[in-house]
Image (cartoon, rainbow, N blue to C red; front, side, top):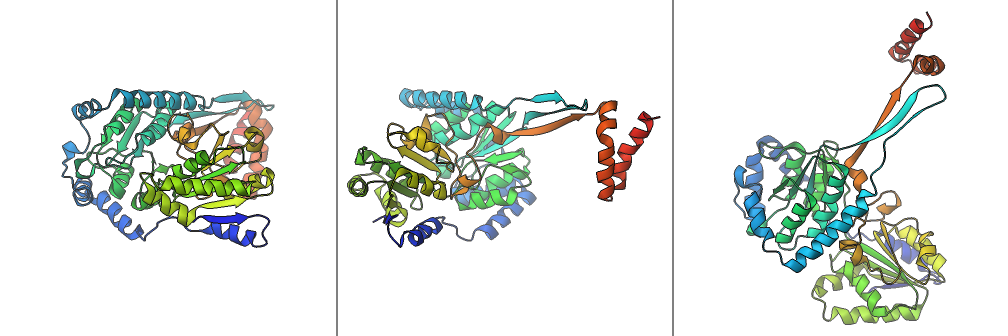
Length: 433
């Protein structure tokens, strides 16, 4: 059974803090293993990647077969049904259209001293995307990671997607094709992250690595950060639904289960201003769990980490939401737009009862790679901006240097950085004769 909380209870604050602090991440001590894998790949390159792929994925590769050939990609893509292709193409179109609107503009201006200032944006040269492999891999994740990179202008885009026992998901290859991916490597785990970060004879190093993975992949991303950029370290999925009584309990139950079925460590929370509605949703969840295909996973998630919280009013609901800072936030209320203005900490907000979170996972347009574990308090979901760098521009005219140079001299001297100050002084002396 999920936890039932009520803000009118004297014990609520203690129980709520316990809910917030519950450790959901399955984090075995893998760091030492990952450190060894990364060191091995750095030293032995292709040989290490091939050996580790045989060990963990039971797949024998050579340097020539580490990446899918164009013929292999075509053969796999041809297996995709017309219905699946049409759905994936629609998703790609909507995701691309949304992310194109995120592109920032370069800017330059001349200030009052006569100096030209500004900035310009440029894409990272190469990015590597990690995609969990096998038949359970997610083509939607390929679209969500690769399309923003291409929209940003990344020149070279590679994907690492393990194929354990040789299993290939044709939809993943089609998604890569639709997204403009250049190379698809059939490797995974910490060894794939290491190869993308440091390079091997066969695998060219990249500048940024994005995409989800297991504990080993997450640990590897932590370790290579600094050598390359990364998107984030994502934890188990989560959803918070704020709903009033004017909703179908079964719809809300399905929304909660849509995240619970991801992972036994996922978390689904309902906040409502009607205790009776909360009970009705709990019953609807139980009924759906009788037949849901992934009921073992969803049931464990709902039992161990699920919660139904009854609040006095929707303002209190918004305040609690901001403390939770959920990855996904559904506002199934009469006026979701007004309520959304009060919910400032969330990875993605879904407005109204006809906007289930699952739309965002696939075809809504906004990215589904989102901050988890309350990190929406200080971070954002994946976007075009993750693949761009901002470079500042400055150009002093003689008059501008005369106007602001002396202040630079003064500050350099106050910091005892003599050459800093002299580099300005020398120019001013010439300008001033």
